Amino acid sequence: MAATKENFKRLPIWMMGFVFVFFALVGLAVLAPDSTPWHVLGPVGSFIQNTIKNDPARIQEMPFRILGIHTAETAIAFFITLWKDISGPARLKWLLQTFVFGIFSLLPLIVFKPAVEKKVK
Image (cartoon, rainbow, N blue to C red):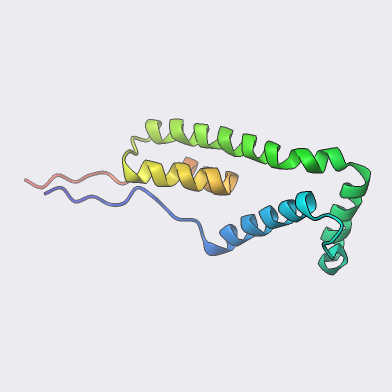
């Protein structure tokens, strides 16, 4: 039998949390800009509230821009996994993780060194 090692590295929880908080803030800014207590978030909330008031079109476009950027990053991840000869479930995990977490997953994929199968005689 060939000894194989998983060619996938999961992101740390803190990175995942950071992305989910960012997505939540974007969602609140788009869906409930007036009913969200932005003052509780300090300078970040003030910045978001100021952007909502002064440039509402940018806020409304933001989910589509995020989707486009993450789709492009996933396409890049696909070609990187081809280049590094990562296939099967590991490739699917990398692509899904890159689609959800974006650059936080793409950069570790770029520096990732895949495991090499050792053949037992």
